[in-house]
Length: 219
Image 1: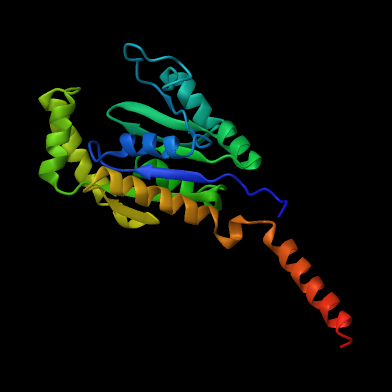
Image 2 (image 1 turned 180 degrees about the vertical axis):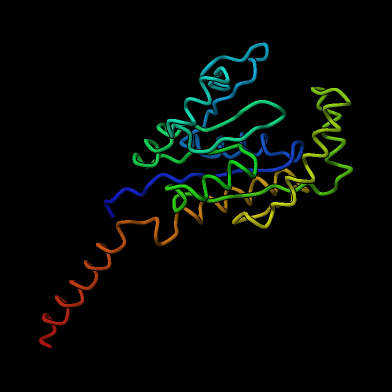
């Protein structure tokens, strides 16, 4: 049908430990054309992390200057550090018809849904099957101290309270099934009428064919 669609902003949110990062990797494995949005942060790089790959690492004054200049699509404070999405790469991807995946919290999702790119977004929230399972996953990761896990669990309750603000909500009881449902959502969103700019022209062509057929039948 000729006309390219605009890129989709796929917002994926969940409390820590609900499987969001794994599902994000599954989604990009399903369609390598989906790019991951690299956030900016004021936290220090962890061993092995590279600037521009895992995050754009910025000082707090640099980050705050970007916010003041309107260069952030969304931003939020998380555990005393600032995180945010640089606006320019996302707008370029939308214009080029490339889909972008966001692994962000409810604050970031809310800001994108209230931005000029709201109509290009689809938001999905991932819930754990139980709170006990959520706690177990956090402990089994072995990345955080008991104190940090307690703080993450407290934050999870606040995060979960925003579930109804999202377009879709998936309960991650089974990873394979949740991943399948996630790809189904993205497929359906790509096929929405208002995301197919070539439809109007195609329907005009069909109507012209109706007229040609009518005249050919001597109507």
